[in-house]
Each structure stands twice: as C-alpha cells, then as structure tokens.
Length: 301
Image (cartoon, rainbow, N blue to C red; front, side, top):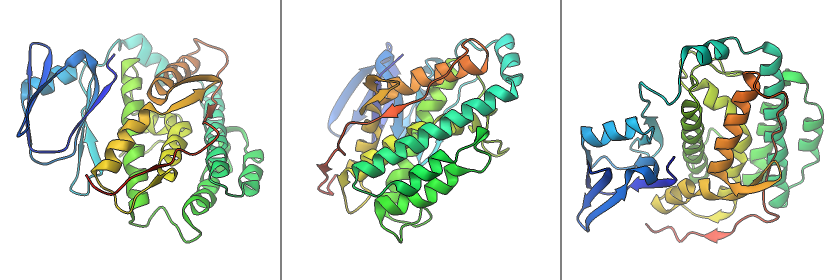
C-alpha cells in the first residue's frame, strides 16, 4: 500500500512507464514509483493523463481525484476489481446485524462529538453545551445529537454568524479536506473488499459512498483541527496542499500515536470486522495534541 499523495496543479503530461508515474511539466520530468503512491489529486484542467497510467492506478487501487473549477473535489476513480472481494464477504455485508450497525453508529457519533469538543476547547471556546449534548446521546443517536452539535460547534470556531452554507474560504477549506478524508476512507473500504454503497446510517440512493460517509465521521474534526490552526485569507493552492498533507497529522487513535491516514485504515478495518462478527468489541477514540497547530499561510501559491 502506497503512502504518497501526489498533487498535479499545473499543465502536465502524465504517463506510466516501467512501474513509474512519469510527470512532464515545463520544469522537467519527474518519475515516481507507482508502489509509493496512495492517491493522485488532479486540481487543474490542463493535465493530459494517459489511459495506461489510469489503468495502472486502477489495478493498484490508487485513488485519482478530480476537482471542479472552484477547486472542490468532484469525483474519484473506482475500479471494477477491488482487492479481496468475494461473494461470501459481500453476503456478510448485506446481513450485518441491525444491533451491530446501531451500536457502531452510536460509537461513531460519540467519538465525533468528543473530538469536536476537544477542537473547540483547544480554540478557547466554551464547551458546556456540547458536553451536555454528548451526555444526551442514545443508542443509534435516535435524537440526532450529532446534527445538533454541528449547528452549535461551527459558530463557536468561526464566529456566531458562521454557517456551513456560506461561501467563504473556511467552508471551501473544510469541504476540500472532508473530500480528501472521504477518499481515504473509501480507499480503505475497497481494500478490505466491501461495497461503499451500503451504509450503516447514510442510506442516500444518490450517494455511491454511503459507507464511507458513515465511517469517516470521527475523523472530520482532524480537518477542523487543521483549518482552525491556520491563517489564510483565501482558499488557494497552498491551503489545498496543506489539507492533503493533513492526512499526515499525528494523532492518537485508541491511545496510540499514528498518522491520520494510518489511523483511518486501522479504524476502517476494525469497524468492518466488528460489523461482520470477526471481533466482539469496538473502540473509537480520536485525540489531538494539547494545542492547535499554528502555521501562518501567506496566501501565495
């Protein structure tokens, strides 16, 4: 499994030769071993990509993500042959017990709110209301405390008049970071051989990534943690590169320090094993360092 995230941000010709990704730009030619690559993010409309390179990515389950003209991720590649998928495994997925789905969603919602409280506290925000909502969570979060907390949480971080529906640099950054996180989660799901369409909570027929949308939730605050620690006036390429690199933020997952992308892979595998009855218990706890990272971005690409 690769570890590098490749971002294509300028006019380039991308091909595949001898197990290498070959990137030709005005500055020269770069070669990157395909086995080192986890994902490729194409954030320009001026890239020419060979079908041979795309085939090599699909064969290796390397995600290729494309953005729209506002630089928001708009789609990603999904191969026909995910690793290790077989009929018996898919049959188990369709028969995941309701009790286990509800118990896992409860843990996911609880872990997400816990991490949101941590991010708010690190930013010097009052968290009493969020803690009260956390205490009110029921099995399967039937009262939807997760959504109630979100409506209170973001104005704490970005100002009382802030809404996730507004068009501004912070929402653009959050959406971009969440899309990168979703791609990471989806990749882990397919590597384990499961279908992304069949979620445990999200059941939107128009969402091909229902399961990824479910499982990514405890790690969303990692993106919030990164965004609140930066200083930027516009959503530029430097911010986007930083958000991709946020997958290398060191966090604690269930008490063990690791990179976020490694934590996501381990967590997804544990969730799938729990749902399929291969483990009896599931713990989900995402923790941060005791301060928000503060890296000033000068606003220039």
